[in-house]
Image (cartoon, rainbow, N blue to C red; front, side, top):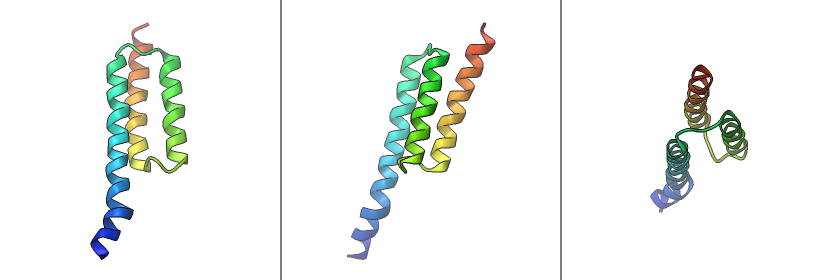
Length: 78
């Protein structure tokens, strides 16, 4: 019984968080040549997800770093 409760309150949110991160990363990679505006919009989206509790601080940091690196790459290509 305790294992089931643990799975419900810990396991499921962790699995969902990982799925959210993978979906966001996949979408970022799929779009490939994103604009600065699109990256800034994604940064706002993941900030909202963090504030809503849908992402942990570590998950947010990972996604934010990916987006910032992509933004730097776009700016360097100018």
